Image (cartoon, rainbow, N blue to C red; front, side, top):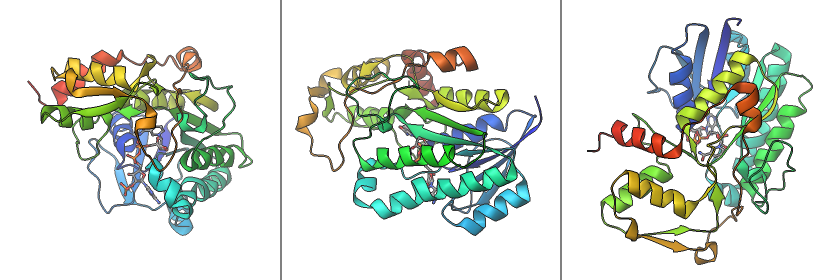
Length: 303
Ligand SMILES: NC(=O)c1ccc[n+]([C@@H]2O[C@H](COP(=O)([O-])OP(=O)(O)OC[C@H]3O[C@@H](n4cnc5c(N)ncnc54)[C@H](OP(=O)(O)O)[C@@H]3O)[C@@H](O)[C@H]2O)c1
């Protein structure tokens, strides 16, 4: 494999941190992490510079100075309800900034790996493979579909779209919450929660996702890849599994259907991914959900 110079955006997010930590452990990658804040706390040996992906000049400078061979765009507005209400801000980060990144990657001859989501699908007939037709039900999904198109249409062949689903698995850094941490927190303090039985996903451990993306870089693969966990389950079943692994009271988890909730943005009902392509072409091997949850329990230092 050639020596790669990898620029990661959104490096302080859930995925960005894990990815920077993983890539910087390989001597064949020179990693530049970028994020909105002045500093970063990812583990490992890498460079860091503040970069807002909506500021074209900053992106230009970073690409010109670092000369990456690969740019992995983990930066996004990911709060689905906020995307629905603050559409201009969402479009600016999730779409326009990707257009800029794609254009500049094209000029520099760098591969752009654009992160995307199961929310590009309508959830009527999941789980989905890479050939399924996007049909988003909310503005976040629309913006991510437009971002995929921006990456694809940028006029160069080196684009990769890595879609993922319901990411969990904060390890040593617990300031970014996720479904697992939220649930553990609530159940540990004896609070009851309502969890939907009619939304189905293939939950994804962030460490597995980062490994899948590393394989894309290593194998220089283009096109669309679905990178998620393998097990298709309802959110309710996922919640019960979490309670079981963390020895928490699962009777506090009340099964409800989605009509119970009033949410600003609609959510697709049954998404989740078929990951055969990634398994075949990338040798992507996500671990069983139960095993990843046990690891998180240990990393959180819980007895
Ligand atoms: N998490 C999931 O369940 C999930 C599921 C499907 C797809 N995805 C996709 O996976 C990717 C990574 O998601 P994630 O879970 O890591 O999200 P995250 O934790 O919300 O991280 C996103 C990061 O993007 C940064 N960001 C936002 N606007 C920016 C800007 N203008 N310039 C530079 N950085 C900016 C945020 O910075 P601040 O820290 O300053 O806010 C944050 O660190 C996204 O493309 C998301 O759509 C995630």
